Image 1: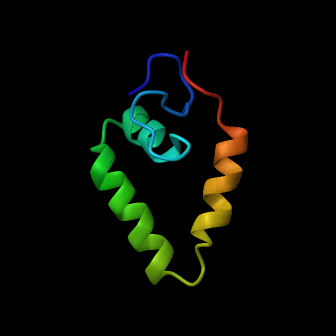
Image 2: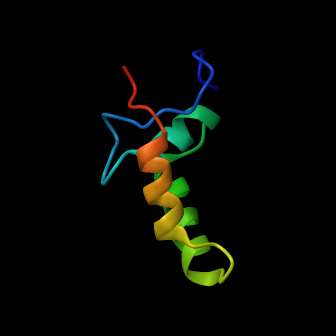
Length: 65
């Protein structure tokens, strides 16, 4: 878990905006596994608008120090 409390976008493991990497780092999950799960959830769930959620998180989550 993160020692500073909140989820932050990753600077080092980012592919696009660092959102999935930041979530994975915060919860201690695999970055690759988090990305795959996010994409699969976005594709197979009509109720989860993946691109819109990602863009909102990209704007809302602060970048790590």
